[in-house]
Image 1: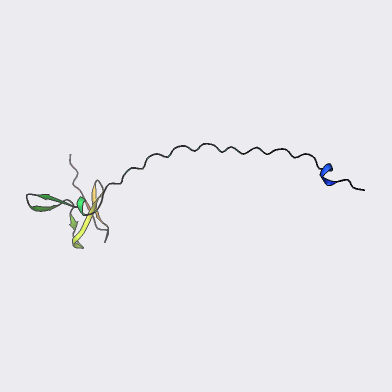
Image 2 (image 1 turned 180 degrees about the vertical axis):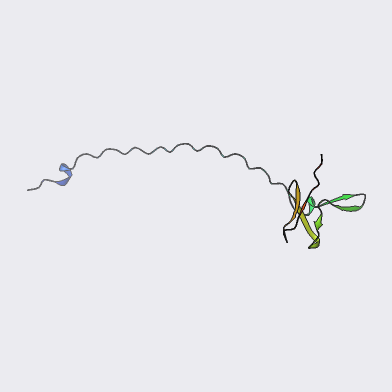
Length: 86
């Protein structure tokens, strides 16, 4: 006849808690540079100056992006290259 099941079972080993590796600290986030209207215009002596050229095809209101050696319109894709200075 079977004996008590409690007596036959081998003793359980105590489980140790699993140690998690420490997380590295996150680097601080940089504040993004403000974009918008402030980067397109400059005010001098009560006059407004446009800092970037407008697109020749699309007309006023469509500024061209500055890509170092060229200006490009994001609306129609028109590209105008800057003059190479020697």
